[in-house]
Image (cartoon, rainbow, N blue to C red; front, side):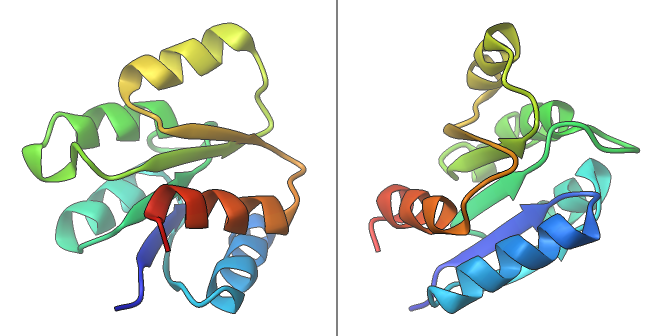
Length: 122
């Protein structure tokens, strides 16, 4: 069965880059344009992993993770931050909110695929 990944980013170019990298590695990808869209899609669908930006309109990635982690159905889903932020305090806040990992932009699509394989075990 193909792993299904939700990508959440307000940048169309980042969504495209992540989609190309992940679909090229054999994953199924659903895109969301901000945290609110991501939260709604995550609740409506079934995902094996979520990749999200931090700074977005409507709802940022941190608020989206906190909302997802408060739902029992989403407690075990790995969530990777893909962001320009590299601040240690923000990384700690993300970890406390329930983020599984962190990739700093600009990113290497191969690195994203490696992390997906490691986190998903496939």
